[in-house]
Image (cartoon, rainbow, N blue to C red; front, side, top):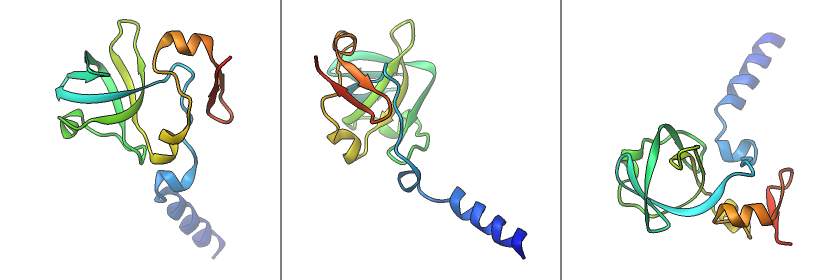
Length: 126
C-alpha cells in the first residue's frame, strides 16, 4: 500500500507544470532582450542581426524546450546567454513574474557593473 502511495505521489509531482514547481534560476551571464526568430538559425536580438548557436536551447515560460521554427516572427521578451563566438546559446521566454524583475542587464557592460544575487534572482545597480 505504501509503495503505491509513494509511486502515485512521485508521478503526480513529475507532471506538475514547471511554474508550480519552483522559480527558474538564471545564470549571472543571462542578459535580457527582445528576440525575434526570422529564419532559423537567423534571428534578431534587440533589432540587430543574431544567430542561434548549434545546439542552442529555447525554453518556454513552462521551461519546456521549443523549436525555433515555432517562434518565427513573434517578438519575445527573453533572457539569453551567448557562447564564446557571440551566438545565442540558451534562451528563456519570460513569464510575467520574471519580466517584472527589474532591473535586469541588457548588456555585458551593465552585468559587469551591477551586482547579481543568485538566491533572489535580482540585480542591483551600484
